[in-house]
Length: 93
Image (cartoon, rainbow, N blue to C red; front, side, top):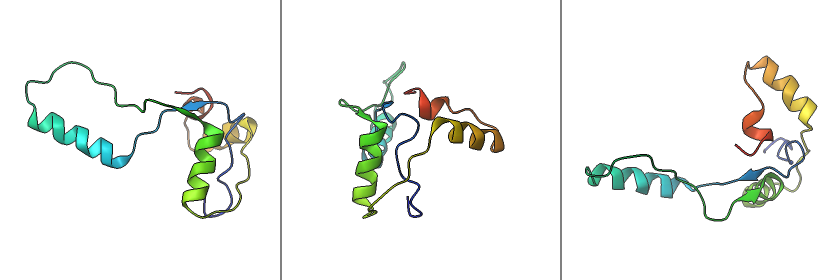
């Protein structure tokens, strides 16, 4: 973000269900205090946003005026170097 690389990733239409760190901490605390809780829990936001909107929001909060978009081919190239997949960014996962 600081270096102008905070633009949309791929098409920017991927949906992102963000969760604030304070909410994550509260749910961990709740699980610690409620030992009877069992099963699978999914921590997610009630209103997901697109990658483009999420990146715009991050830039705004960090007072960064612009962000160069990262096309899918560039993300795939970078993923090869760090030996990972681009699915998490490009497929709303």
